[in-house]
Structures are given as C-alpha cells and as structure tokens.
Image (cartoon, rainbow, N blue to C red; front, side):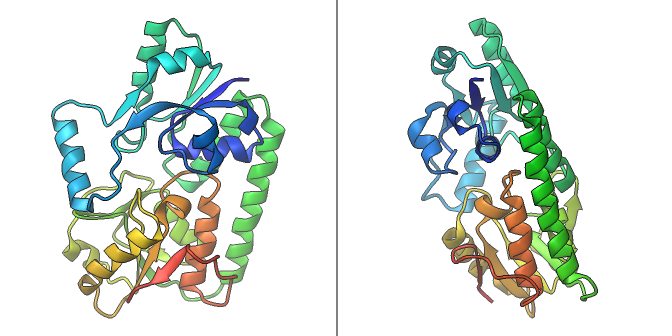
Length: 294
C-alpha cells in the first residue's frame, strides 16, 4: 500500500507499525525518524520558522489566519505523481498541519481516489486508538494491537512505580508568548506520570491564558514544552518565564519529541515527566530530553 503522511506524528506511527517502506510522501516537518524527510517525497511545505522568537511565530500565524491564508502548502502535482492509496491527515489544529478538507478538495481536483484517514485525538486514550485505526486501514491491525499493548504495559509500569506517592501540582506551558494552557492529551500525560495537572484543559483545545491564571493554579512544578522547539529552545524559554512561578521547580522538555506530537513517543514523555515528578521511581530519560532551569 502506498502511504502518504501529512503530519509528523502520523509518520512516526507509520514507522512504528513497520510500514516505512510503504511510505512514499511526507511533510517538510517529518523529522522522526530522520530518514523520513531524506528518503521520501515532500508533498507539504511551509514557512521555516527556525530562528524566529515565539512572539514572532504567534504574530505570523495570527496574521495568516486572519487574512484567510494557509500555513501549509500542498504540492498537488507531487501528490498526484505518487498515486497514494492511503493519506493520513488531521483536523485537530490548523497551526499544526494541513486540514483534511484541503486534502479532499485537492484529491477531487486531481481525480485521485486515495482513502483519507483523519487522525484527531483529544486524549491519550484516543491517541492510542489512532494507532489501531491506522493499522486497520493499512491492513496490519495485529501489528498495531501489539504496539498498543506494549505502550499500555509501559504506562502500567509507570503507574505502579508512582502509586501511593503524593501527586505534585503540575502546570504545563505549551507556548510562552503569549502563554497557552495545556490541552488535548497533555494533561493526561501528567496524570499518567503521577502528577495533578492544574490550569489545564484535559481533552479540550489549548487556549491563550495569562501568567496570573497559570500561577493561580499554585503549581509546584512547571513544565515548558513549546511546540516546534527542541530542548535547547524550550530551556531558553523556560528560563525567561521562571520568574512568574516563584518557589516552583521549572523544567524544560523536548516538546516535539515527548509531548506535543500524538505519536508513540508520548509514552516516552510520560516516563520523562514521571522522572521529574518522582525522582528515583522510574529510570531517568536519556540526555537531551529534559532539563531543570529553576
């Protein structure tokens, strides 16, 4: 089956299911595993925001959306040449990836009959269900069931390790300029890691907030996980906002790898957060995953 992934998390799912050889098209942001972007045809492009500050990125996004513009560009000709049988996309967030409606319109225009599967999880449980959905649609459901069973076992291991321990109050900052709450599956990661999410929106969209509202949750630990930034960028931003949370521990996390992309590595994220909340209860994550800044 010829597969095209229009979001980075779907690319990770495809490889986790052993379907890397079937994948023919990806986006310019599909960087895990590294060979995906090197070896596959890029069918979705967009602005390279590396080097921009969070406030500059926010301003660009709002300007584009207000003008009715698109943040991503579908290379329709390249997509047609690939003649895909299954396209993985989403409707969860216009800022994160190309909406499925754009894809369907393009396919109608091209006369392409590819099957389109939209992956739109709002909770950690729903994220795991998307792995089964991809496996079923791609004809490898037993592999997906095995993958999900293994991930659930890892979650159970973390739950057993932190059982009976006090649950610290945890605020997750998904964006810093302006500040955004933790939404979607992110509060579930904190709960699974043995924490109590505060100033959060479990199973709902992340929304803009204020530092006062975040601080009002009286977090003992603050996790900074900005979308699109790896650990070094997250650490710099975490250091800049630490003063808003006097007395709390402030940690930076490689958000793209561990928190914001709804793929298999979210379970790595649960394990990493558990190592922050309950030192010694679970193994520490590898270097480059987390860093305490205050």
